Image (cartoon, rainbow over all chains, first blue to last red; front, side):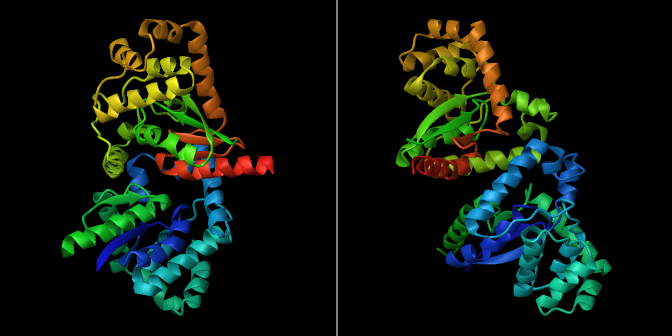
Length: 203
Length: 203
């Protein structure tokens, strides 16, 4: 079976619709999906940005919010801008990394829906604890695992890996043969490529 | 009949596949297309970039060239990177602005095909003169009109207009009701919206 990686960042606006769409798109193509939460911060810092580029460049920010409104409108999903934007996403990423399989994707979708669907904060234990409980995960145990030295190091390694393979923003689909497709509007192309790469490997 | 504006910049890589695709996509939707050449330079300068962001941020540049390679490959059109990149596009934009209707779109496609299909320079009179002649336009007369004070002022006004309506990059489709869709991968959505806006107006 072909597989693909879905790289996403909890503070990233376009990761929100992507996280809601990507599983069905992968299923339709017979592609097994690996959810890889990471942080854009280190990648942005390397480009000299100490904030979201949508804040650094207000014209781009205005464009993005309107575009996201259209995108969510067409999907029939709510959009409410969280304050502040971007939300601190470190703890959510650490937590997601400790979860496996469906728990990770389920938790991730719930974080995005709270943050961008309802405009709620996602940076602290209280907010994330409720979402974890809704997934059937014990929050205290999850936070303990999330804040362990090993898990912190793992997330750092994931961020380094993202930069290394050419992930320049979020979300990205990365195929087995190393192709990177950046953007919510590129999920289909990335997963088509992933399905094709699987065919090429098996032929 | 619904109409839409196609804003493009001759130095812009994604404007190349867009210029080759956009007319057929507009026709399919019954949308009348207005080709609006402009310069990204003033918009980039306002964001503090004195070069293409694909040069300012090399990781983004690497991503873009590979992505463009895939895009052109899927379309079956050639891709050859011009040196230097970006090419000086001022004269081409001034010339395009003096042409009307089909002459403008024909000339524009020829410029993009020379520049990114064959990797040829497009900054000088010799290069552009041959393309004008191939369109059946007298090069000397075209350059005279292009370099007139009135035409120079017109291009400046077009660039100011682009910034004013929220064009943050190239290519963009701008609809009659003021929606901006940025990117070669957004032509379909922009033209769908344009067709819908036409329907809303006529109903």
